[in-house]
Structures are given as structure tokens and as C-alpha cells.
Length: 435
Image 1: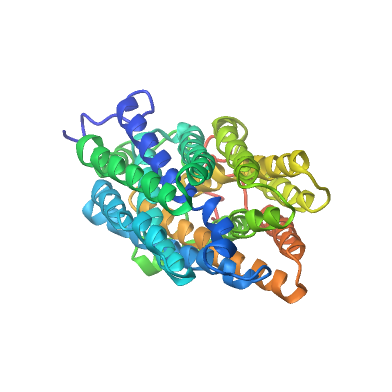
Image 2: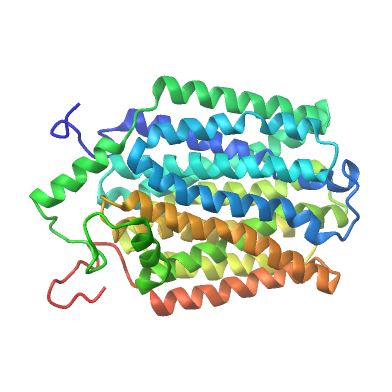
């Protein structure tokens, strides 16, 4: 298929969009299977003492550090060897994970399994996101990212609930083994048989921009070569462009919420007397609201822009985290989790869409990979920070305050340093652009 015959759009590429949505749901299953059962097993299966907050958070620190690096690598690799190959290798790496968890004699094996999970997530989730951005139009980016994250986080929520029931029926280890192997093998088969490489679409878009500049030109960073080096893209994303810096720091801090929900929220609920299935449903509310709302919030940003959904999302999610420790009971914790999840739904697809808005297709894969590097490094930094906060005070509640305050401060930075990135709402003006 030549670049002349490649068309962009959700409708025009509906078959591949569906395949990629199935892929990202399976990616969500892979991480979701560790969300409910593994933290709850820490004391009963591996002998972690109650209150060992840093040790409990260690597997999330490992996951975040590894996934961050693999996001960075995946973006660059995908521009050289294609999106499909990177996706395939991500699933190959996932094969041993359920076996390691099933066999694990101590907590260090769980940390090792989570390292492999970080590689899988960094390669696979990055590619599902990049691939869909390759084949859709600029005015559909919010909806595209909303669909992607909806599918992925509904997968996370469903897996947390399903594995909780599987653990009760088959035992924690066997339940995770059966579920995890089924997910990985199905994903591998679907990748080989049905997924297409979308790199040609990205190249076609780049060529089309050169031939006919768009009506509303994006506010791309100025003074950047057509094919910048890895270090040049990293500098732009991390400090040189204040808008991209603001987006990257917000991405990093918002992962503090997810690190909390993953590492400490289930353990906190255990200490409050909640059962495993209750924990699965409470944590599931967070995932379902986060995932489901993105069908609306991603599309919303295509109409109203990215700026306000991103800023308000940071503050609303922080408020939801603070609410958890202001009340008690399954209903209250579920409502609090839902508020935190809705805030995440406002910001999550739209931070990524903002990066895509102001980075050219020639190096968009690298830019998204570096944004995702900083974003998922937030797992490691957030887990370490909330673990220290809880350990130093001896109370899990301190971790919730640490995360809530961080979200409010980061949202203020985003408000101060960022701008509207949607090309239709804030197009580039060659005479005045200082981006």
C-alpha cells in the first residue's frame, strides 16, 4: 500500500482501530491482574509486616522505573523498526510473568515479575497509543486518546475484579496464573494475525503536511530540525519548551494517584476490614470511572480544548484522593475513588493529545515516548514518596495527603506554564509565535 492510498481517520481505519482497542484492553488486563490480589497477598503469602509501607511500594517503584525507560526506548524503536514489532516483543516479554507470580517464594520474585511487567507495558501501551494517533486525523485526537485509555483502564478495572474472584475460586497464585497466561497468549496471536504496522501512515501525514500546510497550523516548537536527535527531543520535552515541560511534569505527578491506588489503597482497605472482593469493587470503581469517562472527556477536548480539562483534572483527582481519608465505609471509599477516577479521565487522554498537537509527525513517536517516560517515572517517584510519607509517620493516611497536595501544586504549574494546544483553537501565527 503506497502513501497515496493511505487515508487517515477513525472511520476510514475502523478495522485497525478496533484491533488496537482490543490490544490495549489486553494490556490493561496484564497490569490489572496485579492490582487487587498481589498487594493483598503481601502479608498473608509473603510475610510482609503490616506497616511495611516502603517494602510494599517497592514493586511499584520497580515497575515505574522500568516502564519509564521502555516508553523512551519504544518511541525511538518504533520509528526505526515499526510499531507492530515493538508491540510483539512487548507481549513476548510478558509470557513469564504469571509463572513467576505463581512460583514466587518471596516478595523479591514479585518485584522481578513487576520489572517484566514494566517492560511489557512500556512497549505495548506505547504502541497502541502511537498506532492510533498514526491513523487518525488531528481533529480526532482527543476522541482517539479517549477511546484508547477507556479501553485500557476498563481492562485494568475488569482484571482487578475478575482476578479477585479467580483468587477466591482457585487460590491467589493459581487464579493469577490461569488469567495471566490466557491474556498473554491471546494477545500474541492477535498481534501476529491481525495488527498492521501503522508507521507508513505517520510518514504519509508528514509528507502531506509538506505538500499542503494545514488550515490551522499547529504551534510546533520553533528552531527544531526536521529530524531531531534523541537528545534534542528529550531536551524539548523536559525543559526547553515550557509547554511540553508543563505537560511532562503534570504527567509525572498524576501517576502518584495511580501508584497510591495500586500500592497502598488495597492494603489500607485491608486494615479497615474490607474483604478482597470489596477491595476489588472499590478499586474497580476508580478504574471504571477513569476508563468510562474518557469516552466523553477525550471527545470534549476536541471541542473545548485541552487546557482546562487538564488543569481541572489535576485538581479534581487530588480532591478525590483527599476524600478517601475524610470518611469511612464502602460507599464513601467508592465515591472518593470515583471522584479521583473522573479527575484522571479529564487529564489522562488530553495530556497525551496536547503533546500530539504540538509535535510534528516526523518525531511524534519519540515525543510521546519521552512524555510517557516522565509520566510513568511518576510511578517510581510517587511510590517512593508516598511510601516514605507513610513510613515516617507510621500512618497510611500521610501517603494520601502527600499525593493530594502534589496534585494541587502540579495543576497550578500546568495552569501557569502551559497554554491551549488545539490547532483550531490556538493556531500558530508565524509572525508572533514564540513557542
